[in-house]
Image 1: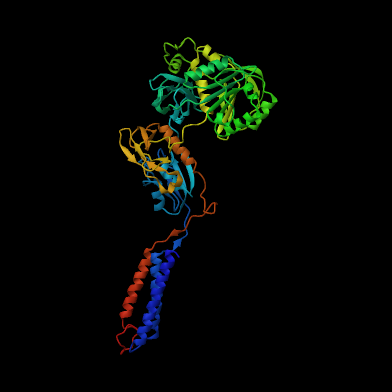
Image 2: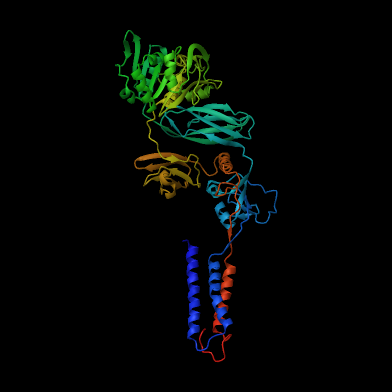
Length: 612
């Protein structure tokens, strides 16, 4: 039983007791009241009880599906200023102060003040994150304000391994002939591109020492006038080098320079190179079984070494791949039928390889300033030849076929896919058709050779870093952010050293999420136990274009008609009626009954002074 049922039962009991009281008093009275007086007193008992119930539980009235016009940041006055009956216009705190509308602190408050609204018309930059949950079950139309001039989209990795390259992509708006530059923390230009007609751009950069660094993104117009400049915060981490197993069918220059790069990168690969008649070069041979593959993070082998694997080794390799091992197959010649069949079993539809063709790699930052920033100053043992600026033409094997779920691993200068990889279980396997990347080193571009192979190894090698908490990327001062995967006792330490303890939301369930409102710009640290997870926070007024685009996207996701509980377009819900008319009716009835019971109306002249 609900509260209304309990209340109805109690009032019915009270009315029944009132009727019994009247009948008892009438039975005990010396002179009985007239019939009409008794009837009025008996009927007044349930009437008063009914009026009291309606005052406490007022009946609902049919709701009207009114429209609420919501003014947000950058809103212009709507064309229609005479809203229909039941429609309202409200202004959120971000809306211009000159707008003639009802000011509210948030959308949820406006909906409580005006129940029955089923349609929202949002005008301006869009809804802030605090207001988006309030739109559930409501229809929404969005009239967007124009985007500001400058940067409106930015995609950056957030975390990069030291020594690896990274990509920064985005989009600018309202700038003809826009140029976008990426500069390192020292102010040196790493890359510069001209934005496409739709404003999209893509930049590449490199990292060196581990730490928390702020790269700079500079946007300029056709005349090189600065339009906008923002920070691109990156966390550069030093992960342990991958454990690499190299199986080569024959020695060649490509293996020589690849081994040299791995040694310079701090790796200690186990190398087995066949030279024929059962002889091998390199390290002591290992049995190719599941235990051996489990010791390594990445297996690099050529097509001849693959073809020499027996059935037992192939089965162990396939199981290790599904368990997380990374595999890179270097194709140096035509693939035999057995190899093609084995690759098809792993999801790679590859054939050919008998023909060779030339390929040009994509370049970035090829001006003198960009090259100096990318290549560094060098050392006495490894000097940098600044005269070597070009990228030599390389050779690749012409492979045919591609997997449906393949992911590009390397592209050429025209954007075509050179190499790709696919996931198999928890591991990744890639096919590499380039045969002479060592020519990059011979041409004085050891930096490009290192970037190339570093990206390949980082993509395919077994993941060894455990998953940490999920932290919202774009955080701003004064705006609430969400952190999930929070353990008990977790704290956030601000740049000035002040700590804030996090309390998980019970409604988040197993996600263990908590809210945090940063008050300072800069790098904050989420501390759980003895581990820290840094994350950047931007100023409230920083990158206005990114903030507007975030509002745009968050609001557009909610555009649509109202949804009823049954899943279709629903009518407006019933509105609770006002209790005050019922309270007034109950008070009048009670006062009249009190006066009538004490009056002489309906009594005989010599009746006793009893109520009945």
